[in-house]
Length: 154
Picture (tube, rainbow, N blue to C red):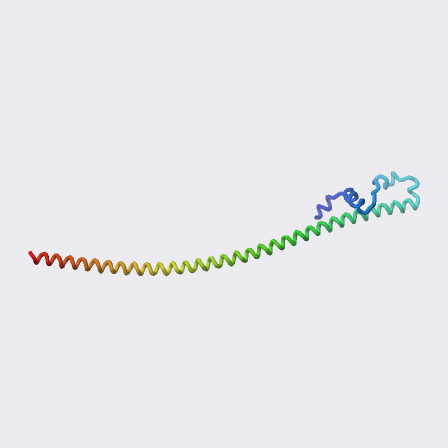
């Protein structure tokens, strides 16, 4: 903001401020002592010249204040927009965090269920292995009985 005000030249500010205030700025050359006429050295002329310089300075000050107020208003709008965006982001972050917690809880439940299923599958596999071993033993016994009957029948 300071660089903006610094970059503005006084001539531009006078052009902006003078028509708004109804003041027509006098050329700078007329206010220099070298360009003064003998009539300008009279007290009434110097008072008039001082008033004109004061009016120009006031117009320049008003224009500068207007620019400062405008910049401050824009800055306030930018701050309000940034605060609104921050609030929206925080609300979105809260919602995202809640969803992440729910997803983590669901994943945890799924992992627990998978562990239970894995345990049950191992137990079932052990049972099937035992049943297979028993079946193999029974088949071998049955074959031995069949061989014994075959041998005794001869």
